[in-house]
Length: 233
Image (cartoon, rainbow, N blue to C red; front, side, top):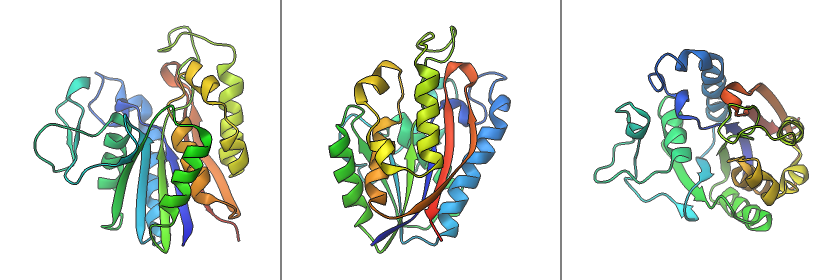
């Protein structure tokens, strides 16, 4: 049982072409980086790909769960389920990314509460890494949404230092630094990815990983980070 690859992607609805009149083209580079990160998961030949994102409750998405972006102005159903849409935004975008990559048929969408404590996130990650011999993790989540006066949460001077610390931890594949991210600070800065990052850290455990951050930026006052991890050679 081992983590053979990981990717971190943000989950703005604008990642999906057609959402936001005239705006989605500005994120072409981010979109391409996310698709490339998912392709790296596939290249690692995992037995199972686990997508983790913030959700109201902890646990796997029900069989047949699907999501929609109708609330963002476009009729883009994600998944093939029936009945009411049940996937939160994080896992809706994860499903959209996975559907466009040549991922193995064995995938699991797993929600974690946005306010889950770091130790709980670590334990969840450890358990998810044990679900197959070769596991890849796609951790979904934005960094701070308080990077500008026009951002969703207005400007907070601590947002840039926070994002820099998270980016450094992802680039170094530093699991302890990720687990040390303070939940209260992350909540104040509207960083939606904190719990998912810490689940990833738990999944990696003590394994030595090599990380990279092929894309980072703060359009629209929100910081988006794309990172990839693979076992260190």
